[in-house]
Structures are given as C-alpha cells and as structure tokens.
View 1 (cartoon, rainbow, N blue to C red):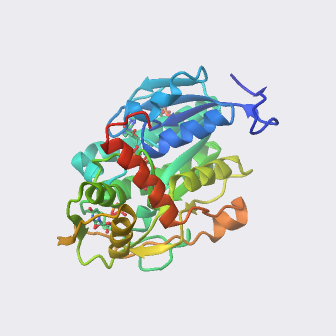
View 2 (tube, helix red, strand yellow):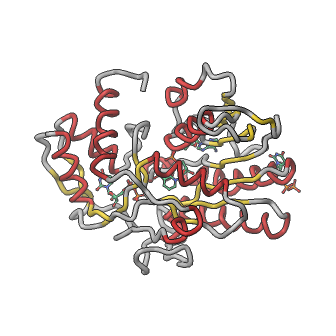
Length: 330
Ligand code: NAD
Ligand code: UDP
Ligand code: UDP
C-alpha cells in the first residue's frame, strides 16, 4: 500500500508506508518494528530466526498491520514495499564467528538482494552497519571520515569486512543506479530483548550477576566501549531514514565511554549481587577502545542519546530478571 494518509495519535500528518525490516525478529529489529507500527506503518518482518526469536515479536502478531515471513536474505526476495531497513546479520562475536561464511554471505549476497529489491521497487533502503568497520581504531573518538584499522584475515573479519563490503555495495548502488540509501554505523547497543546466550558483554554480565555467578571479564577489563540504549538508537534510525538526502554513513551511539571493568562494577552494584569479577583470556583482535564522534548526527539529525548507562542498565536488568523468572511475555 503506498502513500495513504493515516491518522495516529503520534503523528497525524504521517503517510502510511509499507516497510520491510530484515532481521526484524532480532534484538534491534523487534524494537524497530514496534516503533514503525506505533507510527501507523505496515511492517513486514523478514527473518531466518538464526539469532532472532519469535518471542521478540509475539506481542506484535495481533496487529493487522504486522506480518512475518521466514526467509533467508541470501536468497532473492520478491515483495512490494516503500522502505527497507536491512538489519539481518548476527551481531554478537559468538554468533557471527560460529558460521563465518554464512555471515559474509548475509552481508554481501544479502545486501545485493536487498539492494536489487530496492532498485526494482524504487524503495529507500537503510543499512545497519557497525562501528566494527573502524576495527581496532587508531583515531579516537571515531568520526565517519576515519577509514578504519581492520584485520582482513582474523576471526572478526567475516563481520568487519562483510559490513565494509556491504557499505561499498550501498554506495555503488547509489552512484550507479540512483538507489536512495541511508547507512548507519551502530556502536554497542544494549537493552531488553538482547539474546540471553549471545555472549555480548552487557547480557553476559547482567545474567551472571543475577545468578550470583562469576563475572567473566576478558583481559584486565581496561578496554573501553560506549553503550547506547536501544530506544535512543531506534530514534536515531528513524531520523536518519526520514532526513531528506542520501549522505555518507552516520555514527549513532552513546559517546559515554566506559572500561569493561567499570561496566562490570556498575552491574554488580545495580543488581546488588555478590558476584566476583574473574579475568579470562582476551579474544583475538578485541578492539582496545571505541567511542563515537556523533557531531554529524547532532548537526544533521538533531539527535543525541538521552538514556544514561545507569538508567539503561536498570531497565535491562529488570528485563533479564523477569526473563530468568520465566516470564516470556516481555
Ligand atoms: P540480532 O542477532 O539480535 O538480530 C539479527 C537478526 O537477523 C536475527 O533476528 C537473525 O535471525 C536475523 N538474520 C541473520 N541472518 C539472516 C539472514 N541471512 N536472513 C534473514 N535473517 C537473518 O542482532 P542485533 O543486535 O539486533 O543487530 C541487528 C543489526 O544491527 C545487525 O545487522 C548488526 O550487525 C547491527 N549492529 C548491531 C549492534 C549492536 O550493538 N546490537 C552494533 C552494531 C551493528
Ligand atoms: N532481487 C531481489 N528482489 C527483487 C529484485 C532483485 O531479491 O525484487 C535480487 C536479484 O535476485 C539479484 C539481486 O537482487 O540477484 C541484484 O539485483 P540487480 O537488479 O542489481 O542485479 P541483476 O538482477 O542484474 O543481477
Ligand atoms: N567482554 C567481556 N566479557 C564478556 C563478554 C565480552 O569482558 O563476557 C568484553 C569483550 O572482550 C569486549 C567487550 O567486552 O572487549 C565488548 O564485547 P561484545 O562482545 O559485547 O562486543 P564487541 O566486542 O563486538 O564490541
């Protein structure tokens, strides 16, 4: 359905669009689907359920404007849509390294298919890229103009280089075929509906603390990351998609920078846990530091994060607490 006006309590001037979200049953995708439905759009969630879960979108299934399709984007997809958000790709190192060839295929073949679709139906297309394109950065904080420092052969390269190739494909489809693109470079994001077993630092630490287990700190915990709460990130997605022209990639993340040890200590404090920090070997090619320069997002999207780490962790802890108690309706 194209360009039909719709009245919603949130935005009565809005045009209802038919929006495809690939990876819509994943952590970020499920929040995005929810926001798009809130705005009155029709949402088609396409997912192969590799790391996504039905339970992430179960609460949306009653909505007549929501539809799900089991499909792997490495195969062609023939649908009619107005906008595409391409989020399909495992995001945690444990998952993307489990089947690295599939990760690369998802990034490269998947992007080609979604770009081919966008070209055919003349849809605007958004790519979820990543701060991993900066690798182990030699410039700090990282502006979009930094070309990165990536090991092309290491264990992380299926993801880092896959996402870099995907960015190249997006800009070449734009230059060569006039496809309207939006590319966001996402920095570490956390919040409710992160997969409890995906090995990312925030979910690992919270679950360990809630269970009273040891906190698995890799290395001496002096490496840094910047953690963005999921609601802030999704707001950034929508602003980028809705701004007028195709521009270069845009960093979206929270510039607050914390060491992994600080994160561990904060989680232990907020959960009131008796867990102890233990040091485990640092994974290969683990970036030393990561912090976004968000000047571009501030200037062009009037966007900056609102949720501080402490507040976002409290909300995420509450989610995992309910999950561990067996409440799946969350
Ligand atoms: P996630 O693993 O929860 O979600 C990814 C979704 O994609 C899952 O539902 C999975 O089943 C689906 N998927 C994977 N391969 C697919 C394929 N070939 N075909 C169809 N579906 C497929 O991860 P997330 O955190 O929600 O990440 C979403 C996107 O954002 C990813 O592209 C990721 O690279 C990017 N990103 C996330 C973060 C973060 O901190 N969460 C940081 C940088 C970039
Ligand atoms: N494609 C798709 N859905 C469409 C249109 C194209 O999945 O609606 C796929 C198509 O299978 C092709 C890819 O997108 O493999 C790239 O399409 P493009 O038109 O750029 O290239 P070509 O078809 O000429 O190889
Ligand atoms: N990390 C950790 N303990 C864990 C999981 C991760 O100390 O249980 C560290 C990891 O080595 C990295 C940081 O936390 O330095 C962020 O890891 P994550 O896998 O969440 O994201 P990424 O490395 O992709 O930024």
